[in-house]
Length: 457
Image (cartoon, rainbow, N blue to C red; front, side, top):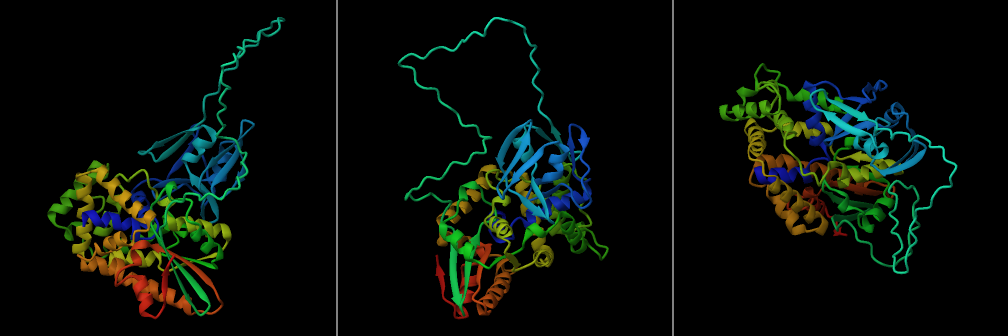
């Protein structure tokens, strides 16, 4: 399972659900995040606090800037402008809405203001330190006129090169051109029509980077027409607190047994070693089930720095939907995905945990990067053959394949069937993991069996 399990998670599960759950669960044994500005702790309002999502630390935008005595000038979906020391500064930064509050990655404040951002893992404190103030030079009284020391250019001297100021807020007027603009890739999109309704089926890769954007015009045009966005799970509506509560409800043993009662001696010892190596107590997870332990231990492993859940295709459209104020519908739920993991047999849960522990003991960042690069290239080229190979790679484990793909595909196809049969001439833009679409058990084949014609776009 070691090789394909890691690659499948980036394509199959909801955008960042496990990446959100892992740090959220790790935080159950630690104190809340604290943000300090020049050693002064920021006191956030009730219900507003720093959080970690998709392994990115997010902090409330307005409250943090206010504590820094910096004026917020303008906010858009992908940029922020502030006024600091009388100067307007703009940086590109994605905005996240959590329970109606605007959050941004903590690094944004360093880029905006020049503050140094330091993370103290032991105290879970983020320290924002203002840049040193340049010393004021003494004024020298001198009645002599200033001397012009500028050297006059000779005839062969090239004109000076002017470097653009990256903080400038001036936006150049786009040039009119008939040239084709390079895009992030072809990806996977299909179209189905019935009863006056249109459903666009988009195969997502849940981790990506800026090289994926801008998307092909066909994506943006289809989304611009959509009345609804459908995703597996809208993780922007899932708080760390809610995730912790739900995992604790179903992921802890209630029958008096302990983790070591459900694992082999070898795997349990290997887990204890990994916990000690990451400053946890050897028995810290004894009251959790193996799938929860695997979720937490997976957060210890390094991730490919080139890709982020925050840049995933589905999260991109969730944020676009918020901008357009269109309804986001969930084809699954947080509970359905967590229950899927909880219902795995002890044997499969241990296999998944052991696989993660093995990777921790035998780190090969080159292999990890290669796997992620392969998945990214497959998406960019829209290679159905490779996608089908990846999808079929789970077939060797019947239990895993049935729960992770087969059963979920049936449920999602049923909902899409309902959209197609509904009245009102509506357009639906559905974005789920690319691995759900192909193969005999894929969503496309299930819809074709119901009599629909599915066309690749």
